[in-house]
Amino acid sequence: MTAFAALHHADTPLLLPNAWDHASAAALAARGFEAIGTTSLGVAAAAGLPDGAAATRDATLGLALALGNGPFLLSVDAEGGFSDDPDEVAEVARELAAVGVVGINLEDGRPDGSLARAELHAAKIAAVKSAVPTLFVNARTDTYWLGEGAVTVAGDGDGDGVGRETIDRLDAYQQAGADGVFVPGLAEPARIAALVKTLDVPLNILYSPAGPTVPALGDLGVRRVSLGSLLYRRALGAALETAALILAGRPVEGTAPTYGEVQALV
Image (cartoon, rainbow, N blue to C red; front, side, top):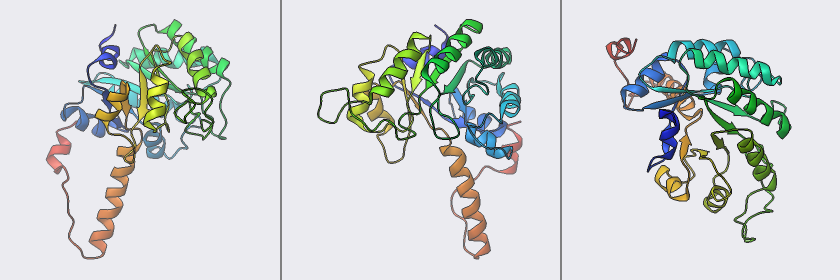
């Protein structure tokens, strides 16, 4: 088991913050985070490109090159692998692993709001695991993210079940070799607990400020909690709020790294 995989089997869930550039990753590492992910939205927005549209392959690989040898374990959000050809997705995985990346997220959601065929996504996972067996593949299904997981057809019959589409897809992804599975948008405690019981690999949940806390998710059986684009969006929000306060002649509250502290991250 790799060091990154082992973090998914610890006594407490792996809290994975997501960076979008060198400074954000270095700052998070300096705060003690052993593992850091990237956020596809942050990477895409910083490059002026759309997220989830397979437009950020070069930007993602460039960021991985900058971060892959940092003092932390790096997992990269590769959208859907930037291709529907499993061999091309495997090549992306090889390039990421070559610069020190230890994990990859692969999602089955498409830019038009539909889901890729489960068989195709499973083929991508299998191709990546064949090309780079040590790379931790976190297989993401967007059934709940896209609102397709609302139908309760499994579970105890009292509303605590999980959509059959979700269960079937995650089963296919596990069989294809996924090391973990990710269901963003799933936040109901009873459904999370029900889903955990169907899995043979660690479950990753996207943190929501309105949802369960990290300790509560751990109690439900969740082994990894991702922050997704939350840190990037909050950083952007803080920048806008600060500019508005200054324009209005009001005091700026809160803390910010000094010029020297940011320089020290390089």
